[in-house]
Image 1 (spheres, rainbow, N blue to C red):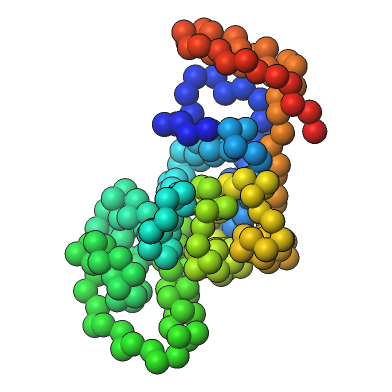
Image 2: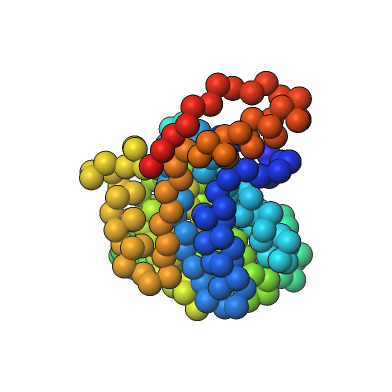
Amino acid sequence: ERTAGAVGRFVGRAKELAIIERSLESARAGQGRIVMLAGPPGIGKTRTAHQAAALAAANGMLTLWGRCPEEPGAPPYWPWMQALRAFVAAAGTEAVHAAVSHAAPLIGALDASLAPHLPPCPPTPPRADAARARFQLFDAISGVWQRAAAQRPLLLVLDDLHGADVATLKLLEFVGRECGSSALLLLGTYRDAEVTRTHPLADTLGMLARYSHTTRLKLAGFSEAETAQFVEEMAGRGQVVPLVRRCSG
């Protein structure tokens, strides 16, 4: 499912991409959206997300990626840290300083590698109340994305959310709730077969479903016509065509 980007002629997913394109249009107009893209391993979730990124780029949007690792040991909020690093690398110093603003101490404490790129700010005194400290961090990161999107509309992709830690998912709920009035599209991908009732992502999906600006899409297998197009495209690029069986529903 991993690809370096949208390569060659993209086959299928016309319905899903039409919904994503409308969501991108909504985000560019300042009405943020959330799209959750589900499906089994190898069905094309990440490739569809890359195609969404191509659509976003064609319309002047900046795409930032964060991926949830399958390996243990990643720090909390890892995909959010990746997205913040990507933003710092893609945007100029002035844009980064404007977006981060007074949140610099909290962002720098979250990821020390970002500290040299952030605006100078006096450190925030530590909070004894853990819940209050977490709220401040969530509010700070949400504010960064809202200010960044005000400069240039954003597509923020969080890939493989079935592997996310609880902290990452709680931050997703917070940012998702606040993004409805900003030029931001949150696009998450996950393997739905791995999300049981006790999986932490199940609670997050339930919370996101309460927001009117959330859409959930499930990728199914190709139709016979799409399978034929896929085989033709792969053969035309000189690649070995795997045995593809039609998946329905």
